[in-house]
Image (cartoon, rainbow, N blue to C red; front, side, top):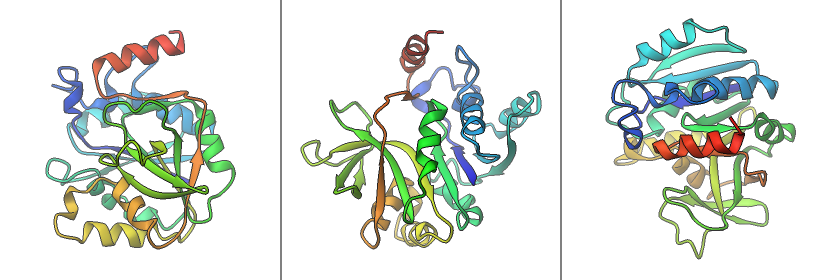
Length: 237
C-alpha cells in the first residue's frame, strides 16, 4: 500500500511558527508532525510514502535527508500549492491512486493503531476514517454517515445534520473510483479551490464510500500553537 501525505500548504493558522518553515516540520515534543506520521505508517506496516510538498519544500527535503527514515519516502512537488486548495496536492499524486493507497492530511498526528485499523479490512472501494461528532469543534470537516456509508462531507454541513467528523485519512482499493471522482471535481469551474474531501463527497453520490469509524480519540489536527500543547499533554510528553 502507498501512503500519500499532503504537506504542501503553509499552515497560516499556525503562525508565527510557520513564518519560516512548513507546518509539517514544526518542532513538537516527540519530533515533528511529519516524523510522527512516518513512524505511525511504518508501525502500521506501510512501506512507502509520497510526501507532496510546496511551501519551503527545500526545508522538508533537508529535514528528511538528515534522518534515518523508517519507510521509503518520495517527495512530490505541487507547483500550484500557493493558488490551489488541497485538491491540487492530490492531483499531483494522481498517478499512484490507481493502486491501494492511504491518503492523509499533513497536519494531523495520530497513533499507528488508527492506521492499522483503517487498512486491516479493505473498503469496498474507498473508505474515510471518521469519528462520532459529539461536540463540534472549530474547523471540523463534518460528515454525514448513514448505515455505514458516507453521504456528505463538508465544513459547511449543519451540525444538526452531521453525524461524524473526518480524521483526514482516506483509504482506497486498487482501481477504485477515487481517481475518476478527483478528475471530475478538479475539472469543474473553480475546481482548483476544492478541498480534497470534496472528492469523497462527490464520489459518495455515485458509489458507496465506507465510513471507517474510529473511537479512540488518539489523534489531533494541528492548526494552532495551542494544539501542539494539547497533544503533548495528552501523550504525556
